[in-house]
Amino acid sequence: MTSTHANDESVQSVVATTPAASGTVSTRAERQLASGHWLLAAAPLQPQARAEWEEHGAAWLRPGVLFCAVSIPASVLHAAVGLGSPQECAGPLAEALEFGPLFYSPEGFQREGSYTALLPARVARLREPIPGVVTLPQRALLLVPAPDVTEPVDGGGPWWVSPLDGPGLLCPPERVTALVGVGRDVLAVSKGPQDA
Image (cartoon, rainbow, N blue to C red):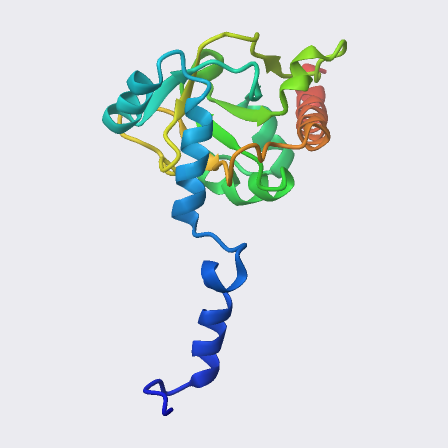
């Protein structure tokens, strides 16, 4: 049988990576859909949360059973990566957190802006919480962007800096702790000479 494609090698690579051929590859859209369904399980009213995502780009969810959420001042994470805006920080933060879910909200920490990392639920039960972050109480309401909101939005709502890449794929707590520690150290050093 003759191929109509100029490069049979590229056809083979496409065939080898299709879900039917390998059984493990999924598209970003499929992962986004699965992540959205998983997150909606944390909504007080799932139909209402879905409608809020569609209409406003963000919905109120309750951390607790599926995940815990920690809120971090933007200045701390900006200092940790040495960049000044959420857009500039997106790539380095995602990489530092092993592409765990992290979103930015311009309204957090008295309008300074904040990042919220989603971590395993067990982190909320630690006797010694992560220093320099606010761990949201179980059952608190958290405004979470829709899975496809990955850029700043009009009106200043939250948006994913590092979107959830699949159900249950959360930030490693030790990575969040290390990143926050670096940011706090950098801020302490930079404030030192000003205080003298």
